[in-house]
View 1: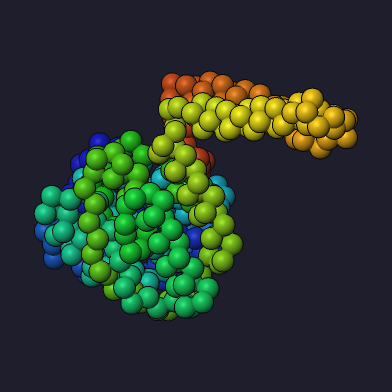
View 2: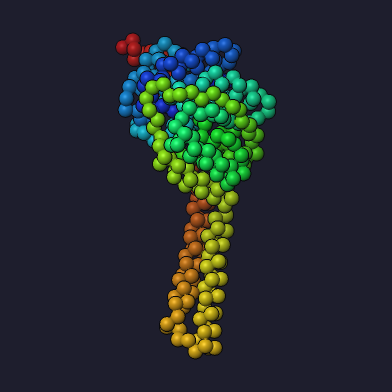
Length: 327
């Protein structure tokens, strides 16, 4: 993450949102121009295949606050946000969607709440303007499940509009769809998290890029998050514990087989419990070996150098875009 030089960075992941970019940019500028803040708008083009990148370049020619990061291909929303966070230069970072459903007018309210001593302020789309079956209901179920498993209760983990102190994001690395879990990860690290009701607007142009298939990704990431939170430095406790359970089952099954052979004169080669005992013994050994391998991997992970989950083609600064226009 770059050294903070500005008061505020607005990070916007962009994927095929050509028609929404100019209206959204005008709204953001209108809101921030009266706040007395030094700021930047950092748009991350996540491999758009429409005219989104060209539209961003057009805006940048007359707008000194806009910076553009362009990916070589589509890496996903989490990767786009991660790139934006890394290259943001603001002491406070506010991500928001490019589809215009997040209201820029809520940014001052998030910043005001942040000034009360919080490290992260999460938006809550209390009155959502999405399809209730394919978007709203699954989101509510996911929010409840995430809150139960992580212990960090928020009404709306999926709302992109949030405010972060830059230092709160430094120790967090994002993979998969894990950007929605940042408040939980930060809370585990001792950060203070608050929630503010924000306005949610209907999409004006284009269509949503996310469907029900995202639910399964979120559930798998939730399992990963829980594992990393509880056992990231001691995976042997998980796999070794499962191995001990299997070993105990193997011993019990073997004891029953011996009892049936010695006391009841039941043939061992006809007893399915003997197979169960052998399978459990083999599984126990495998779990313990997996735990040892996981311990080696964890140590390698914590000692290795950081590697991003994206590949940046180029970063356009305002001066560079103006130079291209003159040529």
